[in-house]
Length: 260
Ligand code: ADP
Ligand code: MG
Ligand code: MG
Image 1 (cartoon, rainbow, N blue to C red):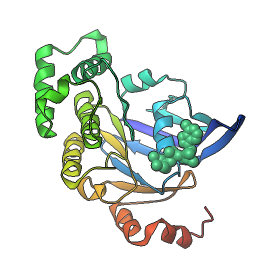
Image 2: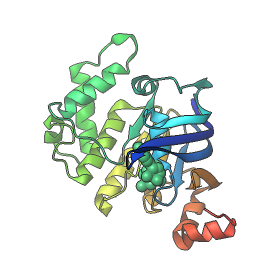
Image 3: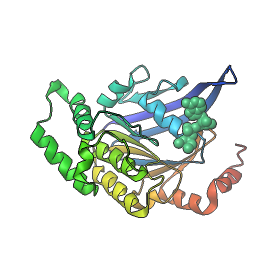
Image 4: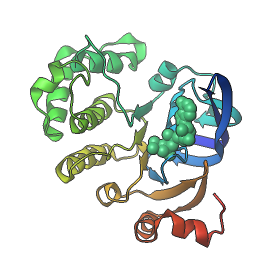
Protein backbone atom coordinates (compact mmCIF):
# COMPACT_ATOMS: atom_id res chain seq x y z
CA UNK A 1 0.00 0.00 0.00
CA UNK A 2 1.23 3.48 -0.87
CA UNK A 3 0.09 6.67 0.78
CA UNK A 4 -0.14 10.28 -0.38
CA UNK A 5 -0.68 12.72 2.46
CA UNK A 6 -1.53 16.38 2.22
CA UNK A 7 -1.08 18.14 5.52
CA UNK A 8 -2.32 21.63 6.35
CA UNK A 9 -1.35 22.74 2.86
CA UNK A 10 -1.26 26.47 2.22
CA UNK A 11 -0.47 27.62 -1.31
CA UNK A 12 -0.06 31.10 -2.79
CA UNK A 13 0.31 32.38 -6.31
CA UNK A 14 1.94 35.60 -7.35
CA UNK A 15 0.74 37.36 -10.44
CA UNK A 16 1.30 40.73 -11.98
CA UNK A 17 -1.65 43.06 -12.06
CA UNK A 18 -1.16 46.51 -13.57
CA UNK A 19 2.58 46.33 -13.04
CA UNK A 20 2.27 45.26 -9.42
CA UNK A 21 3.19 41.90 -7.94
CA UNK A 22 0.18 40.56 -6.11
CA UNK A 23 0.37 37.44 -3.95
CA UNK A 24 -2.84 35.62 -3.17
CA UNK A 25 -3.34 32.68 -0.85
CA UNK A 26 -5.39 30.08 -2.75
CA UNK A 27 -5.20 27.00 -0.56
CA UNK A 28 -5.81 27.79 3.08
CA UNK A 29 -5.04 24.53 4.88
CA UNK A 30 -5.93 21.38 2.94
CA UNK A 31 -5.78 18.02 4.73
CA UNK A 32 -6.28 14.84 2.74
CA UNK A 33 -4.87 11.30 2.75
CA UNK A 34 -5.17 9.01 -0.25
CA UNK A 35 -4.07 5.40 -0.17
CA UNK A 36 -3.69 3.05 -3.11
CA UNK A 37 -6.89 1.10 -3.50
CA UNK A 38 -8.98 4.23 -2.89
CA UNK A 39 -10.79 6.60 -5.22
CA UNK A 40 -11.38 10.08 -3.84
CA UNK A 41 -13.39 12.82 -5.50
CA UNK A 42 -13.05 16.53 -4.85
CA UNK A 43 -15.95 18.73 -5.80
CA UNK A 44 -16.31 22.44 -5.43
CA UNK A 45 -17.33 25.66 -7.14
CA UNK A 46 -15.17 27.25 -9.80
CA UNK A 47 -12.18 29.19 -8.58
CA UNK A 48 -11.97 27.47 -5.22
CA UNK A 49 -8.51 25.95 -5.71
CA UNK A 50 -9.10 22.44 -7.06
CA UNK A 51 -6.68 22.78 -9.96
CA UNK A 52 -4.26 24.59 -7.68
CA UNK A 53 -4.22 21.52 -5.43
CA UNK A 54 -3.50 19.14 -8.31
CA UNK A 55 -0.82 21.41 -9.80
CA UNK A 56 0.84 21.78 -6.40
CA UNK A 57 0.88 18.02 -5.81
CA UNK A 58 2.51 17.57 -9.21
CA UNK A 59 5.10 20.28 -8.49
CA UNK A 60 4.19 23.19 -10.77
CA UNK A 61 6.52 25.92 -9.52
CA UNK A 62 3.95 28.68 -10.12
CA UNK A 63 2.32 27.48 -6.90
CA UNK A 64 4.25 28.33 -3.74
CA UNK A 65 3.75 26.18 -0.68
CA UNK A 66 3.88 28.56 2.27
CA UNK A 67 2.87 26.12 4.99
CA UNK A 68 2.18 22.42 5.44
CA UNK A 69 3.55 19.42 3.57
CA UNK A 70 2.93 16.79 0.92
CA UNK A 71 4.23 13.33 1.78
CA UNK A 72 4.58 10.20 -0.31
CA UNK A 73 4.96 7.14 1.90
CA UNK A 74 6.02 9.41 4.72
CA UNK A 75 8.64 11.36 2.79
CA UNK A 76 8.18 15.03 1.92
CA UNK A 77 8.10 15.58 -1.83
CA UNK A 78 8.05 19.38 -1.74
CA UNK A 79 11.66 19.66 -2.92
CA UNK A 80 11.20 17.14 -5.72
CA UNK A 81 11.01 18.44 -9.30
CA UNK A 82 8.06 17.39 -11.49
CA UNK A 83 9.90 14.55 -13.24
CA UNK A 84 10.91 12.97 -9.95
CA UNK A 85 7.32 13.08 -8.73
CA UNK A 86 6.27 11.39 -11.97
CA UNK A 87 8.94 8.71 -11.65
CA UNK A 88 7.79 8.02 -8.10
CA UNK A 89 4.28 7.26 -9.31
CA UNK A 90 2.33 10.53 -9.46
CA UNK A 91 0.35 11.38 -12.57
CA UNK A 92 -1.74 14.41 -13.49
CA UNK A 93 -4.34 14.48 -16.23
CA UNK A 94 -4.71 18.17 -16.82
CA UNK A 95 -7.82 20.27 -17.23
CA UNK A 96 -6.22 21.84 -20.31
CA UNK A 97 -3.74 19.37 -21.84
CA UNK A 98 -0.90 21.02 -23.73
CA UNK A 99 -0.15 20.48 -27.41
CA UNK A 100 3.39 19.37 -28.18
CA UNK A 101 4.62 19.84 -31.71
CA UNK A 102 6.94 17.33 -33.32
CA UNK A 103 6.42 14.57 -30.74
CA UNK A 104 4.03 11.80 -31.61
CA UNK A 105 1.73 10.34 -29.05
CA UNK A 106 3.50 6.98 -29.26
CA UNK A 107 6.95 8.53 -28.82
CA UNK A 108 5.73 10.51 -25.84
CA UNK A 109 4.24 7.41 -24.22
CA UNK A 110 7.35 5.28 -24.73
CA UNK A 111 9.58 7.97 -23.27
CA UNK A 112 7.28 8.45 -20.29
CA UNK A 113 7.03 4.71 -19.62
CA UNK A 114 10.75 4.08 -19.96
CA UNK A 115 11.67 7.02 -17.74
CA UNK A 116 9.69 5.38 -14.95
CA UNK A 117 11.19 1.92 -15.30
CA UNK A 118 13.77 0.76 -12.79
CA UNK A 119 17.32 -0.11 -13.94
CA UNK A 120 16.94 1.73 -17.26
CA UNK A 121 15.42 -1.37 -18.85
CA UNK A 122 13.27 -0.04 -21.68
CA UNK A 123 10.00 -1.78 -22.48
CA UNK A 124 10.36 -3.92 -25.60
CA UNK A 125 8.80 -2.48 -28.75
CA UNK A 126 6.64 -5.56 -29.03
CA UNK A 127 5.25 -5.28 -25.49
CA UNK A 128 4.70 -1.57 -26.01
CA UNK A 129 2.71 -2.04 -29.20
CA UNK A 130 0.65 -4.82 -27.67
CA UNK A 131 -0.19 -2.70 -24.65
CA UNK A 132 -0.92 0.34 -26.81
CA UNK A 133 -3.27 -1.59 -29.11
CA UNK A 134 -5.12 -3.06 -26.17
CA UNK A 135 -5.67 0.34 -24.56
CA UNK A 136 -6.59 2.13 -27.79
CA UNK A 137 -9.27 -0.50 -28.22
CA UNK A 138 -10.52 -0.19 -24.68
CA UNK A 139 -10.85 3.58 -25.14
CA UNK A 140 -12.48 3.33 -28.55
CA UNK A 141 -9.62 5.33 -30.07
CA UNK A 142 -8.48 5.11 -33.64
CA UNK A 143 -5.06 3.52 -34.13
CA UNK A 144 -3.92 6.55 -36.08
CA UNK A 145 -4.09 8.57 -32.84
CA UNK A 146 -0.81 7.00 -31.78
CA UNK A 147 1.09 8.49 -34.70
CA UNK A 148 -0.34 11.98 -34.41
CA UNK A 149 1.53 14.79 -32.71
CA UNK A 150 0.63 15.04 -29.06
CA UNK A 151 -2.73 16.76 -28.66
CA UNK A 152 -2.15 18.80 -31.82
CA UNK A 153 -5.50 19.43 -33.45
CA UNK A 154 -7.18 16.95 -31.09
CA UNK A 155 -10.77 17.81 -30.25
CA UNK A 156 -11.61 18.43 -26.60
CA UNK A 157 -12.94 14.88 -26.27
CA UNK A 158 -9.89 13.36 -27.98
CA UNK A 159 -7.57 15.22 -25.61
CA UNK A 160 -9.41 13.81 -22.60
CA UNK A 161 -9.35 10.27 -23.98
CA UNK A 162 -5.69 10.73 -24.69
CA UNK A 163 -5.04 11.70 -21.06
CA UNK A 164 -6.70 8.42 -20.06
CA UNK A 165 -4.62 6.54 -22.62
CA UNK A 166 -1.53 7.99 -20.91
CA UNK A 167 -2.91 6.87 -17.56
CA UNK A 168 -3.46 3.30 -18.77
CA UNK A 169 -0.03 3.11 -20.39
CA UNK A 170 1.97 4.74 -17.59
CA UNK A 171 0.13 2.96 -14.76
CA UNK A 172 0.94 5.43 -11.99
CA UNK A 173 0.33 4.70 -8.31
CA UNK A 174 -1.69 7.88 -7.92
CA UNK A 175 -3.62 9.68 -10.64
CA UNK A 176 -4.94 13.20 -10.25
CA UNK A 177 -7.69 13.69 -12.81
CA UNK A 178 -8.60 17.35 -13.17
CA UNK A 179 -12.02 17.86 -14.75
CA UNK A 180 -11.48 14.93 -17.04
CA UNK A 181 -15.24 15.07 -17.67
CA UNK A 182 -15.55 18.66 -18.81
CA UNK A 183 -16.80 19.04 -22.35
CA UNK A 184 -17.45 15.33 -22.84
CA UNK A 185 -20.63 13.93 -24.32
CA UNK A 186 -22.17 10.96 -22.57
CA UNK A 187 -20.50 8.35 -24.78
CA UNK A 188 -17.04 9.81 -24.28
CA UNK A 189 -17.74 10.14 -20.56
CA UNK A 190 -18.54 6.44 -20.34
CA UNK A 191 -15.36 5.55 -22.22
CA UNK A 192 -13.26 7.69 -19.90
CA UNK A 193 -14.94 6.10 -16.88
CA UNK A 194 -14.32 2.63 -18.27
CA UNK A 195 -10.63 3.46 -18.62
CA UNK A 196 -10.32 4.76 -15.05
CA UNK A 197 -12.33 1.86 -13.64
CA UNK A 198 -10.02 -0.59 -15.39
CA UNK A 199 -7.18 0.83 -13.28
CA UNK A 200 -8.99 0.21 -9.98
CA UNK A 201 -7.22 -2.13 -7.65
CA UNK A 202 -4.83 -2.40 -4.73
CA UNK A 203 -1.98 -0.65 -6.55
CA UNK A 204 -3.87 2.39 -7.74
CA UNK A 205 -5.29 5.42 -6.01
CA UNK A 206 -6.97 8.41 -7.58
CA UNK A 207 -8.12 11.92 -6.87
CA UNK A 208 -10.88 12.87 -9.24
CA UNK A 209 -11.58 16.56 -9.47
CA UNK A 210 -14.94 17.44 -10.87
CA UNK A 211 -17.41 20.23 -10.92
CA UNK A 212 -20.36 17.93 -11.61
CA UNK A 213 -21.75 14.82 -9.99
CA UNK A 214 -22.38 13.12 -13.35
CA UNK A 215 -18.95 11.50 -13.71
CA UNK A 216 -19.31 9.97 -10.26
CA UNK A 217 -22.28 7.91 -11.45
CA UNK A 218 -19.77 6.02 -13.59
CA UNK A 219 -16.69 6.11 -11.39
CA UNK A 220 -18.15 5.59 -7.95
CA UNK A 221 -15.74 7.12 -5.43
CA UNK A 222 -14.98 5.70 -2.00
CA UNK A 223 -14.74 9.22 -0.57
CA UNK A 224 -16.10 12.60 -1.64
CA UNK A 225 -14.68 15.89 -0.40
CA UNK A 226 -16.10 19.35 -0.88
CA UNK A 227 -13.67 22.20 -1.32
CA UNK A 228 -14.65 25.79 -0.73
CA UNK A 229 -12.53 28.82 -0.02
CA UNK A 230 -9.32 26.84 -0.51
CA UNK A 231 -9.96 24.08 2.01
CA UNK A 232 -11.96 20.90 2.40
CA UNK A 233 -15.08 21.77 4.32
CA UNK A 234 -16.81 18.43 4.29
CA UNK A 235 -16.04 14.79 3.51
CA UNK A 236 -18.31 11.81 3.06
CA UNK A 237 -19.09 8.92 0.78
CA UNK A 238 -20.64 8.86 -2.70
CA UNK A 239 -23.95 10.02 -1.22
CA UNK A 240 -22.45 13.43 -0.50
CA UNK A 241 -22.01 14.04 -4.22
CA UNK A 242 -25.65 13.17 -4.87
CA UNK A 243 -26.76 15.57 -2.16
CA UNK A 244 -24.65 18.35 -3.61
CA UNK A 245 -26.22 17.80 -7.00
CA UNK A 246 -29.63 18.40 -5.45
CA UNK A 247 -28.87 21.19 -3.03
CA UNK A 248 -25.93 22.92 -4.71
CA UNK A 249 -22.86 24.32 -3.03
CA UNK A 250 -24.84 27.21 -1.57
CA UNK A 251 -27.02 24.82 0.42
CA UNK A 252 -24.01 23.26 2.07
CA UNK A 253 -22.40 26.62 2.70
CA UNK A 254 -25.51 27.84 4.48
CA UNK A 255 -25.91 24.65 6.46
CA UNK A 256 -22.34 24.89 7.74
CA UNK A 257 -22.77 28.60 8.39
CA UNK A 258 -19.75 29.44 6.25
CA UNK A 259 -19.04 32.89 5.01
CA UNK A 260 -16.99 31.97 1.90
P1 ADP B 1 -10.67 25.64 -9.56
O1 ADP B 1 -9.84 24.60 -10.22
O2 ADP B 1 -11.30 25.19 -8.29
O3 ADP B 1 -11.68 26.24 -10.48
P2 ADP B 1 -8.17 27.14 -9.52
O4 ADP B 1 -7.26 26.36 -8.65
O5 ADP B 1 -7.99 27.03 -10.98
O6 ADP B 1 -9.69 26.83 -9.11
O7 ADP B 1 -8.06 28.68 -9.14
C1 ADP B 1 -8.23 29.16 -7.81
C2 ADP B 1 -7.91 30.64 -7.76
O8 ADP B 1 -6.51 30.80 -7.97
C3 ADP B 1 -8.59 31.47 -8.83
O9 ADP B 1 -8.90 32.71 -8.25
C4 ADP B 1 -7.53 31.61 -9.89
O10 ADP B 1 -7.70 32.79 -10.61
C5 ADP B 1 -6.27 31.65 -9.06
N1 ADP B 1 -5.12 31.09 -9.79
C6 ADP B 1 -4.92 29.80 -10.10
N2 ADP B 1 -3.77 29.63 -10.76
C7 ADP B 1 -3.21 30.85 -10.87
C8 ADP B 1 -1.99 31.33 -11.44
N3 ADP B 1 -1.11 30.51 -12.03
N4 ADP B 1 -1.73 32.67 -11.36
C9 ADP B 1 -2.62 33.48 -10.76
N5 ADP B 1 -3.79 33.09 -10.20
C10 ADP B 1 -4.08 31.79 -10.25
MG1 MG C 1 -12.08 25.87 -12.74
MG1 MG D 1 -9.88 23.80 -12.13
